[in-house]
Length: 386
Image (cartoon, rainbow, N blue to C red; front, side, top):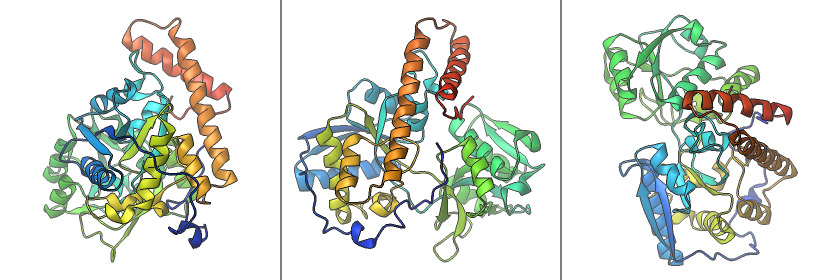
């Protein structure tokens, strides 16, 4: 279920298949108006959604209303309720498909989400490590002080995944708890902790790089298959990524072998109208030059950056598009079908679980996670989250 794939899933395809002269069978038939949710107004995800909306308005007369949300609940709830067409989400969309974290709750459960497109930019997602330590790879973190952010599952799983790459667990480091992400970087600068998970371009990372301690980023060998398998066992959404922008001097001339996953992740419900799903993916590819430079990270929607064997199943109409342009393979179809089957196993397990679920929230979560793991295991899938 989690094959080790290169970041550029299309890299081995003939270049001619990636050109704009491919004959397309269907036409773009988008509605007059669409509604999206996205991160807050100061985020790159929001800026990208606005840039895409401007392109759709100019080229197709489609007006896009972008609703900013400060957290996963405020972004995902309108999608769940059918009040918006799409969400330019983060990795919480994957947790929603899996029915874990905040979704292991009576109000949520596994979500019937389908992927439309993603953006993979030049930055990476990594552990920022104080530069005055001799940490070159994740294995060098043994015995170091590593931040744990209370209430932020995504950041903590990212940290755990990096430790796993180095053959480590939380037991091999000194865990230092912090009430928030920003506070952990204050702690590194103050000398109270040594590492915290972040993106390579975030302002706290820049502040650490400018501090007396400096900053370093663990190198992940892209050819170490066993290490990547350990990492993806913890967090299957990570992919090898050559990072070319970030604090501490990362650039195109000074890249770092690291890891990343897409942001934003544009998703809709499985029953999203085919015209919207097909129209959007085709419009994004046909008109790439019209928006790619209009928001930070928008270049990441290019066809060459799409991972067609990732962790969330595509909408059927998006698969139709990729088949039409000749980039969809039998291997991709098998992967897609396995993801859809996995999602159906989860939905069936949730429906059965609710018939006799505990009323106490903690007991509910524990019982659901057990039932979820059993259902996936019985169907031949790795539960990933236990």
